[in-house]
Image 1 (cartoon, rainbow, N blue to C red):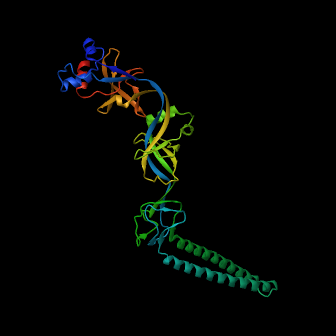
Image 2: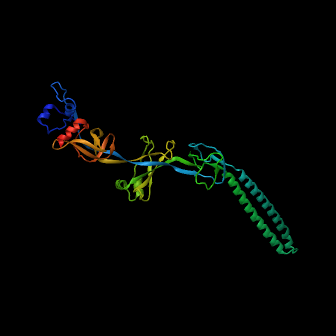
Image 3: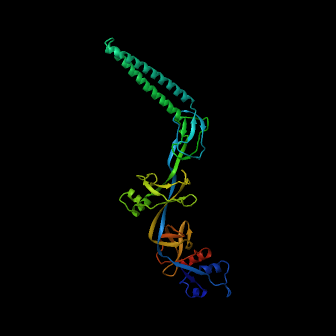
Length: 381
């Protein structure tokens, strides 16, 4: 970085050479109209030449986080909630009891089904006795074989009744088991809109709760059509899936602008653009063994890329007017010009510039404001 020192003599001799006497104008026109012999010397105004450098850049996309599985917990039988074993937000293990539904009606159904099954078994045994009793009599031609065939038919019917009764008993056992609702996986319990004593049913529209399995977390983000075209151009591969495989690991920027310590990978893309907003969805997966991430979190996906020739401008050399970024540049005619920039991103404390200035352009490293800016604008008009 070079330093440009402007003196009062140089201003008088060659005003068009360096119009950046704005610093002196601040001193003179903003309250010190007559600088005497004892006035302080003009300040030093540093300048830099813009250079092209290789930098790592990032493309950021707003993301919404979801657990690898968000499981709705719903009752399989109807009844009153007898107990709620967990609290909202609790971490539970697979198989851990969550809710208890009043099981008394279903135990009675099981008792009835068990009694029917036992009765069917007794009838089957009686039918078997009749068959065994008639078989030797038919063989010795004592009775007609019609009676034996009738006895065997009764035996088969009794055997079918046993099978049916056994199935009803097993179904009743399953219903009794359904009265205790357990966690289908490890995860975090969501909100519980029901209280003890509430009526729960299979057809109710609202789930008892939602269990989020968060060992891995999916971050869903979207790309615009322009971003998607750039993505296809920047990475190798004949298909989108092949290009995704060539993507580097991505970072997750959390809501407080801290970077999640574990990097993730982009796994898939939606098959088509959303016609309503012209975007296409992607998903990145992050390991969440620490449990820091939860379903419903938001953040930003940061995809790194390498720029071999990036034009970097320090942010301290810029100023903003109506959301546009400007710099004061020395033009070929030795005039100082406020130049708007097209900014593609940032690298550290510098802007990555695509339009507005060229390589080796000299910039003042401090933006001019106040009376200096007004005076400079009048001189350049």
